[in-house]
Amino acid sequence: MIGQLCDDLQELRAIGMHPVLVTSGAVQLGQCNVQSGTGVTTTYACQAAVGQIRLVAAFSEHLSKLGYSVAQILLKLEDFRSAGSRAEIAAVVQAFFGSNSIPLINENDVTSFGGQFPSNDELSAELVAALGAQRLIIFTDRPGVYEVDPRVDMGARLFDTISALDERLLVAASDLPTATGRGGMKSKIHAAQIAAASGAVTVITCYDEARKLSRIALDDRVGTWIVPTIGDKHSLQCRQLHLNQEKESPA
Image 1 (tube, one colour):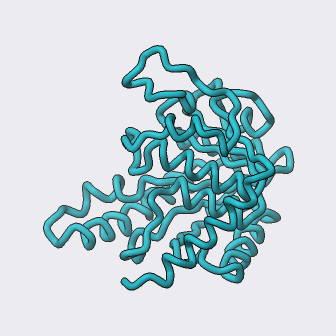
Image 2: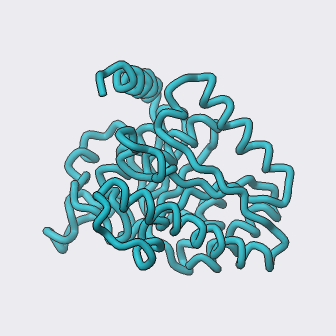
Image 3: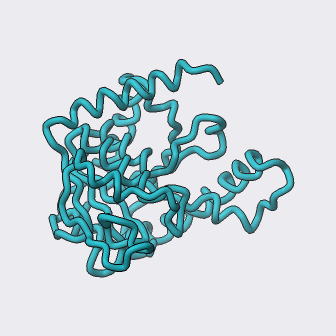
C-alpha cells in the first residue's frame, strides 16, 4: 500500500496539488524491537521512537524512486492550542509545497505524555483547519460510513453524501476501533466535523485501486463524503473552546 500511496502523491504533485500525508504505524513497527516490561507509557514511547524511523524509511525508499524526499513532521496536541502555533505549523508545512519534499505527519508519541490526540484522525482534521485545506481523505478498513454498524446489521446502508451536522452520524459512530489503529469510526466522524468547521470536505473510505487517493482528490465519488454546512463555523468555535479548557485543566 505504501508504494501505491507514493505513486498517488506523485500524481497529485504532477497536476499542481499539494498533498500532505498523515500516517500511523510507528508503534506497530517498533514492537518487534522493544519488548514490554518498562512500564506501558515508556514502552509505547520507545516503540514509537524505533518504529518512526522505519516508517519514514519505507516512504523514503518509494518516494526517492519518484524524485521526491520525505519531510518528517511530528506534532502534539499542544501545538494546536493557539492561533500563533497553528500558523507556525502551517508555515512549515506549506514551505515544502514548492520543493521536492512531501510532508509526512505523525503524532509525536515519544513525548506526548498526558496530552495525546485520541487518534491521528483528529490530528489530521486539526491540520486541515490550520492549513485551510479543501479536503480531508481518511482511509479505513470499511468502504465508508454506514447508517448503523455493518458488523451488527448486514443490510446497513452506506451514506454517499451527508452533512457534518446530520444527527444520523451520531448513530453511525462506533467506539469499536478499526483493524489498524486506535481510532474507530467515531473518531473519524469527529474529525470530519472538525474539518467541516473550517469549510473542508471529508471523504471516508477504504483504499484500493477503485478508491485511489488521486481519484478521490479529483472528485471521484467513492466512499462517504461529509460536507460542511453554514452552521459548522459554530463548531470551530466550540472546538477551540474545548482545546483552551483542556489546557487550563489541572494535570
